[in-house]
Amino acid sequence: MQRLAEIPFPEVERIARTGRALVILPVGVVEEHGAHLPLGLDSFAAEVYAEAAAPHLEEKGYEVAIAPTISYGVARAAIDFPGTLSLEPETLRALVVDIGRSLARHRLHRLVILNGHRDLSHMKALDEARAMLIEEKTAQVLCVGFTNDPDLTAACYREGVPELSRSVRPDREGHGGEWETSLALYSFPDLVKQKIAATLEPNFNYDVDAFRGETQDYWSLSGGRGYFGSPQSGSAETGKKIVAIRGRNIAQVILHAWGPAK
Ligand SMILES: [Zn+2]
Image (cartoon, rainbow, N blue to C red; front, side, top):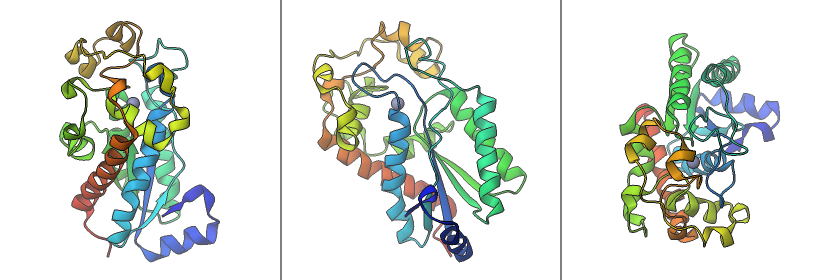
């Protein structure tokens, strides 16, 4: 696995020439995740899952390159929290299309958009970018991670995860709750305010439909707390398992769509 921004151009040429190149573009956002987690969590998560998926794809013959992360996205639900930044959906869509076209210019024609941020207009913008690149025959493109296809999202993120839960209400775990806290404790523990996390009482009593459907903003839904579920249930041990499982899940979704590299 290579990081596109960390290699010189002849190496890119070599990867492209194999005909087995697969570029993963992690996409995240700058958005609050409770008082204990960093604003960049979804971007960092997408990078962690890209790295975890890569060896499974390489095993099937792909030359994997991870492109620099798009760290900005559409974040309307949490926009009232300090530090949350949002693009317009058209901006995000245009950014992804531009990157896809540039990659294709160098014969990097397989693009996986790995999105770490759940927001309906954000996911829709990514899907539109995917459709545009396919329609203009620029590249083979796949959206994985959080996508606007709930079954695909479940295959990437849910499969094998709820059973790891230590929370008493796994069905209420969401944004900033047990799973995201676990991931952070394992993958970037220095960015977790652990003393604060220990004081955060579970937030199970919220309107799940309004949360999922984004009909109400996070501030009012969570009473200004910014998390949904139980941060205290998170652990590095669970995080380690989540990373391994989701990395494998994501690779399987990609291999299911495209098969092994020829
Ligand atoms: Zn998140």
